[in-house]
Image (cartoon, rainbow, N blue to C red):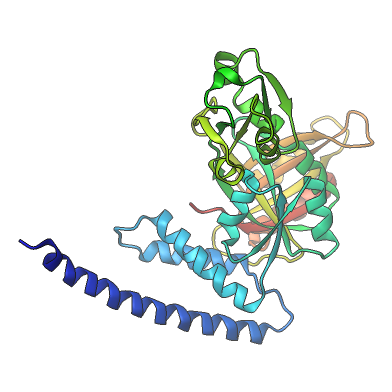
Length: 357
């Protein structure tokens, strides 16, 4: 049987489908542009609407493409359509190739303008000053816990959380060298060094470990020194021309980092939401119990509780809390009102759609 003859009907069908897909994509883009014109100066990015669209698409999906694949495809479609309304400027901890960079691309797609910052503080300041629309900041890692600097900035920033990204973290040892025997020092963010602590002990016990501001910055330094290596992403290896000496060197295989998306707008109900808040406990016996009691009283599930010293007040702490539901949900709103009476300090960071795949 002639293979080309057997393949031709499928190729013809694909060509016809491609033409239909292209026509439909452009129809969608026209409606997106019309929506942008109707919004005028209002916010063009609606996280709750995007979450609803992706949830609906996954519900319609019958394969063979996976839910992850269709979510990724439609995220890019929405990114391109949103850019017709107004290209978004997104700050992230740079340089290019950091996990924060990859998380920002996952959430906003490739049509957004991604702006690298040298520190998390710079990303916050840039958006607070109105020089960018949103920022993506790491807030916690499944292995090493909370990202302290992000939590400190959340206490004082006027920005609101409007989304979250959950990103699997796979660390690779990258170098200009051909094998690990020539490596004398390893650059990485302190969190990455901690996440690969045991692997480094076993494989590079004599190499000096040098913390830097980001893994991608470590990759830049490693690209300039054949005796150095960096712990970073596959994207950083490609971006900075480094050899991948070892892959997936994280000590815990399911290592994951959670990022918050922050901007200047409140986010509406998506149907599956989370609320993040900061509360201070009064300095009295049983204060923490009283702080958490409203959630139990009104049936609100708490998914995170993290304490951190309150700056300027010796031995006093604030609590970073995540709860299920939107602050506009009746039971959540009632619980938050009750909490306000019991807390010495209360700040709602924001309500936003729960991260999908």
